[in-house]
Image (tube, rainbow, N blue to C red; front, side, top):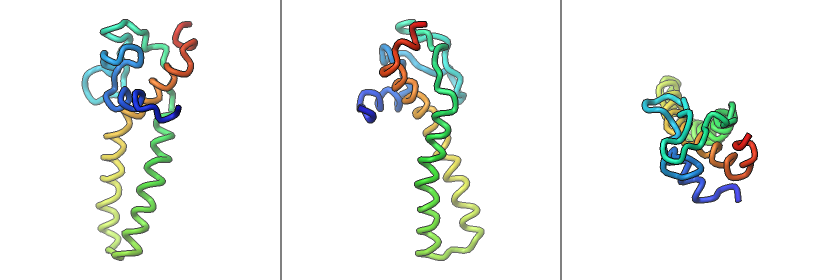
Length: 120
């Protein structure tokens, strides 16, 4: 199942896909993964999420923010400066808020559906 609630929870909390307790990321705001889970010792360096989370996020945000901007334009016809000051910060905030959980979700999906790639 693609939208498995357990995997969504692991992604949202950014926890280890094996034990569900250890943190995936080093402290701070970076996207740098820990080398291994501090609880179960899973080698996180074998992760291969690459640019997948960023690409998915581009599609998801593009399909939500652009229609929303068009709706606001067609309904309220605000001045151009309002669009310029509203949409870029909204897109940036949505990106920063969801990139880490989405990457964690992709890692959990890979761990669940391709466990052989983690045991090499």
